[in-house]
Length: 161
Image (tube, rainbow, N blue to C red; front, side, top):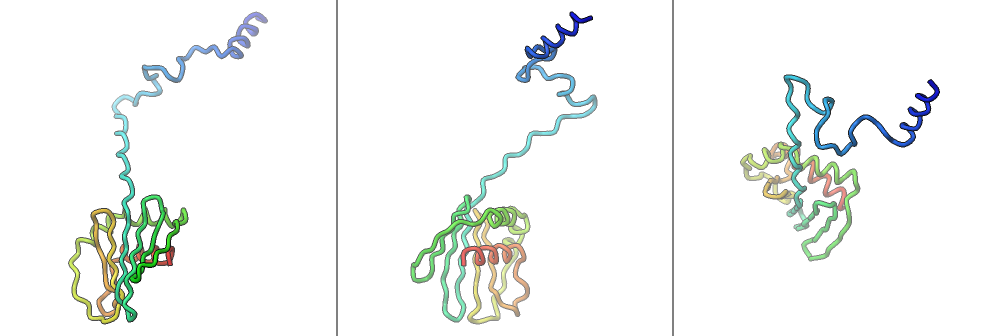
């Protein structure tokens, strides 16, 4: 009996096992789907985030600012006079921006027709995300702006202001 224990301890300490190494070619029974089931399809590759461009124009002073955010979170703001500021979105802001621009609601908002505004000297926002373009005029009498586009505008204006 002592000989069996010594052989067992020696096998464990030397790394000898009765199972195949992890890089085996054939899957084990535990790797295969149960009878009657199929393996889940491979995950779709996530598209790379797109560049986001926000143009804000109008207002009493006649602003003309363009905010550009690269997929990695670097941003630049160029104003009407050509002055430039740069920075980087925080991790939380970049995550929120990615969620907002990936939301199908943004593309749906882009597909809605826009009506002429009743306001003068209001800010006009034009948002471009990849090939999707949407926008609105910040005029209370025009009705509510598109929710997702407005959330992106508020995030970018706040983070780069």
